[in-house]
Length: 260
Image (cartoon, rainbow, N blue to C red; front, side):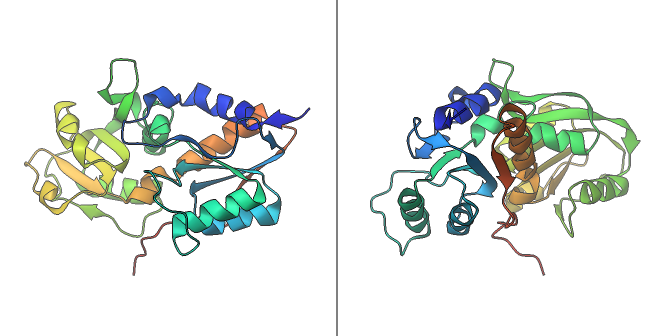
């Protein structure tokens, strides 16, 4: 049976509807036709030129990522530009490119829900609801209260971190944790309202680390907080399309930030 791009995107959008994406986002099909045939899909977090090269090398005719290749309108497409080079290579090779970005952020089984699962949280719910049972971030409870020092070790182990950025540790215990994958500085107030003693996200700005005595922030990195969505999308596509190749990039570490 021959599958089309639309068959793949329908499965993804049943999990993460495009209607959920933020107004500034560009989730969806950004390169290619819904009617193009698909025999192999390559998945990654970021649609880099290297990922397109890998798709060409392994014979994939569709790329699915979390971050969109094109965030805003392109004024020109040039091989001298990273986005332009990726677009040109994809078009030449007949590769379709799709992104499930904030659409996958706003479902509880998406990015932030995966973070909660890594920490073993219970009673997980949406942190900043949009009224549809969806929204950004999640909040949940630990099986038992732990100290700040124990929380630091738990988070570092759960997310395979060498280091993290943290506000002043609490003197009391932590029993409730809020989190948002990616850039979550805008949800700090919602995290405090939720009753969480700890908020975990990425891209937190300097002044937000001046926290009150009963609240703590950890910045684990944008990439580190979102990378599990690749595995989630992989499992989703493998389950629904068992007859064709679904691969995760072998160059999976596309994080542009390096730690020394």
